[in-house]
Length: 145
Image (cartoon, rainbow, N blue to C red):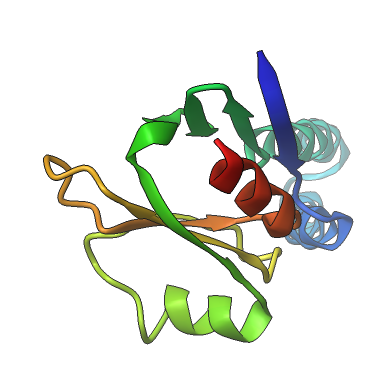
């Protein structure tokens, strides 16, 4: 039974920027090849942006005994300290202060997140750095588990 679910979708400005870049290619195709190929390129560009909108989203779920970020999952019993990070802390931890062995599940368009330390002696990963807009809720749920 899922007790928490958050879906991280790319914001409209990211998709609009990608679409702008693809439409600039469509214009170049129009200038070089004419109208018929331009229509095909426009349709392909539009379908590509719709596909990317679905492909770029991520899902965080927590159930009774498992924490999952997309396809990565870990049992809750192996989770240690949980730190909710604001934008400046997240920026430092995903850049200058990052541990190369850590699991990073970050989306550049969401500035906040959670650092979840692991207490599994068999796992060389020291922590998971997760992008989330609802870090306080995640920390409350995992601390109470």
